[in-house]
Length: 332
Image (tube, rainbow, N blue to C red; front, top):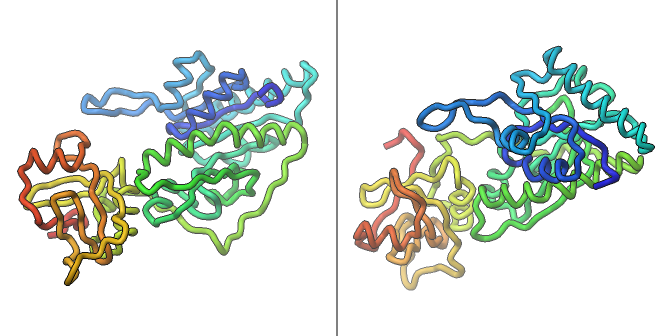
């Protein structure tokens, strides 16, 4: 990464950690900017963001701010970017101005802060599909076969900037949103460094997003924690796995609450004779849907850890076949 510029890195969530780590290892981080510590856990103890935690552990200069556009914060950010550009010029590696990398930051950057800077954002989808807060989960929940990341410019409208680069990745048949999140995050270092190198070389080639193909990745809430078993098995599998790890897919088996954590589609699952009604659960975890069936692989009982379905069923002394139901929270 010797040909990369020093950057100001703005982020909060774990999605940006692999990219920050790669830039830090190469000595290309002038300043890290993150959200303030938040109360977390049962003890409500102030907890740093994953980005702050990494910066503190590796001795990187860190600014934690509620508003990056506030005068004092903005001055420090722009000053760090200007200093980095000056160091590059003094070392014989001139660059056109300061550079900024933004990943899962959670604050909107204003025009005054961005003025004159090359600011790029790593987004967890192949834009213009899945603009918004939950692109990884929505891609999985909607049954997409391919996900990916995009490096884009920052724009007034959410995730609507020009695209500098993309990196696709196939979605596995048993993959959960948590696993896909980590896999996509791991694509960040190469694709971000590639764009930064192009910027230094003056070869960046942006492309405009096709607005007619844009879809919205609405933020998940606890109200999403259920699945309609009348859907086809492919849709049930996509939703259950897409809700893992949060908010999970709530269900009830023989009056017992259970969270469905992972399932797979059962190939060619059509019962002999008359079709089974949706919601019938077999001893091996086969769950009949509106069309076809899924096999439940992992579940989580109330207050317990995620475990293999068979182990849970044996411990619960589950008599099968039985009925599994799932409904929106707060409904009968």
